[in-house]
Length: 237
Image 1 (cartoon, rainbow, N blue to C red):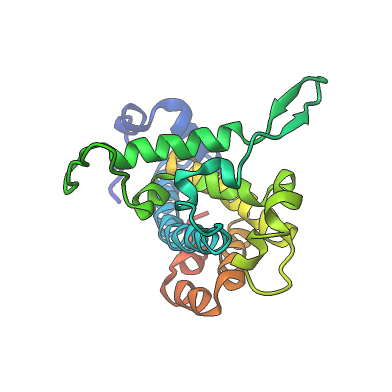
Image 2: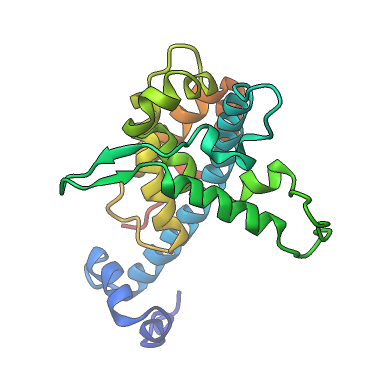
C-alpha cells in the first residue's frame, strides 16, 4: 500500500466516526486501519455465506416440522397462520396484556403479500390464487425463524412440534442460545458494522452447532466450504 493510499479520502468514503473505530483499533496507523477495514469486510462476507446456508437449512427444518403437524384438510400453515400462532394473551412487564402471536401472524401475512407481488421471473397470480408456500417461506427473514425457539413458544410450539426439526433430544435452549447470538451477528454483518469486538470463534462454533442439530451432513458441508476460520486468523492487528 502506498504512503498516500489511506489519505483523507477514506473519511469521505467511510465517514470520520466510522473510520475512527478502525483507527483506534490500529493504534492510529492509517494504513493498518484501512487493512483492518478490508479484513472486516472480508470476514463479514464469509459469515454471510455460512449464515445463508444455515438460514435456509433452519427455515426448511422448521417448515417440515410444522407441515407434518397440519391437520388433514387444512392448507399449508403459512396460509392459516392462526393454526400454530393463534391469539394468545400474555401479561407484559408493565401489567398490560398483549397477543404474543400477533406480530408473527402479521409477518406471515406480509410475506404472503410479498410473495404474491409481481416481480422479475414471477408469473402474475390469477384472482384467488395463492403464491407457492416456498416463496412465502423465503420472504420470512431470519428474525422470524430465530424467535420460534424463544421461551414463549416452548409449551405451544416447541414441545409438540418444533423439537422435531432437530436431532432427537435437542432442547429448546440448545437451539435458542446460539441462534440468538447468530441473529445479532447477522444484523451486524447485514449493516456492514464492525466485528472487531465480536467473538468470531464463538460465532463459527454457533453456526456449526445449529447446523449439526439439523443435519450432520449440513454441518460437514458448511465446515468444508467456510473460510471464516482462515480469515479470523488473518486479522491485521
